[in-house]
Image 1 (cartoon, rainbow, N blue to C red):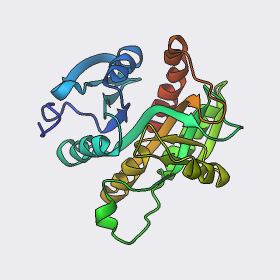
Image 2: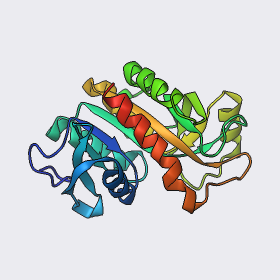
Image 3: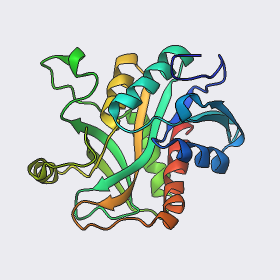
Image 4: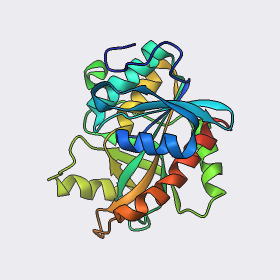
Length: 234
């Protein structure tokens, strides 16, 4: 076990899906995995391992924000040998063409800073998705009746943002959506030569104020989980 993950050696699969919400991890494991077993509950950050079409998969909650995700991804790679890490989560749409319920595949993830900023020093590192995973996810999404967008997103340090000027520049430069974790995930994957991707569902929209009702979230998020699983094992 590691400092923040209580799984025993061999209990974490090489492929890990990372929802921020631990309860969403439980829902995804119960819905999509066979024989899912709880392998982590340290600090209530639930993790489950089971199989999907015969492939071992772990679904581990990562918490909210890049510092929290950084802890779990570092330990998953360093202590458990994770090779493929896919964030599955919600995001806020920023472009008019992006609609609530659409799926976004994050090709790049811009940020003001990440927990890895100190390592990079003066370099503005450009975190990007694994190309093979991105291609596979695009194919999986195109086979479904789902609005699909592929491009850059913004990973923010703050949920209650008070920088309308910054949001304006993100929109101006074509950023599709905002969330809070992908930039650090991509940076850590690059550092350790692992595969990473963020598959996101648009749950609300910064321009229109529209938000996905709670009763519809699980159905919409299901497409995201299936796209991530198909991409991981194509």
